[in-house]
Length: 342
Image 1 (tube, one colour):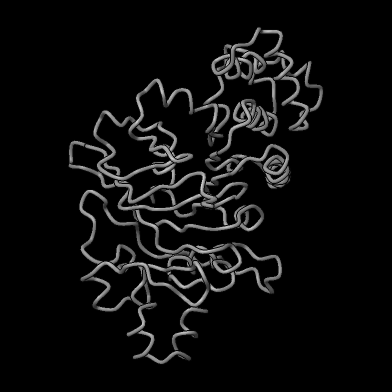
Image 2 (spheres, rainbow, N blue to C red; image 1 turned 60 degrees about the vertical axis):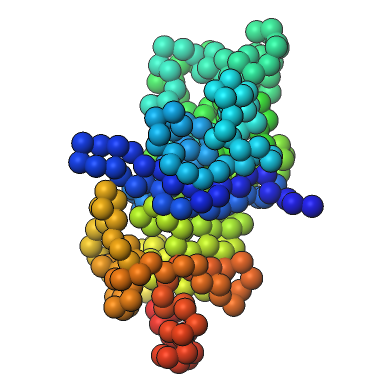
């Protein structure tokens, strides 16, 4: 039996601007299994959030931004549903934790009122029932003094507490899929660790699948089962977390991992960075989008886009000419393995 709860297939998303059409997402495909956490990682502007907002229905389909593709949730293509049908799913069966809780929380309403509003929107319940449900979810997320904090406004809470309120709002309807867009970016490392532990605990307790969007590879290592690496609107590598961290094959993935601070480093040298800038997606390059920044780029990289190359590990793919069988054969397997462990 198919275990997939969410399946994004060949998604293309563009945004019309004065200068031209920005090709923000270019043929992206990924899937999420039940009770699984996947990570979508990459630099700012690579298309992570656009992909997720399209999947959850926050990018307007009517504006023509979604050029093609399908997003199947429990067997139904969300992109073909009417606004009324999508509204019954979004915030109820599928929810999202946004990046900056202070921006997305209403400063004129108590946090309790905002949590209750989500529940009342999707359930025929009295305000008393909604309040009991809100208190229950605050206890589940381990927010101290839930009855007192229910009456507070966002500015009266700390950053970590506001993030927990956002999690409570996303989980109060017990969704099947939870999207988390950079949920720990604005928090200090201690609170980050608490939020990561909380989300891991809630996934098992509430039987929820999670899509994590982040550029923080440290958070990815603690949370996800599988990883999709995005660059310039495309998936350039994907595989299970252990494979991506220990046997990455795409030069862009190497760059992301090299930029992560290591506690076991013997020296305090500056962290390496990926040189150059991402390409202009109004006029995407003809070949591999990463070629101008790649220290291993070949002539073919500049002329043709590489397809997904299956690697030795089951389910591990990299869109890189270095991984093409003919390339491996020409440079020799030993030398190739040396390159891919730079």
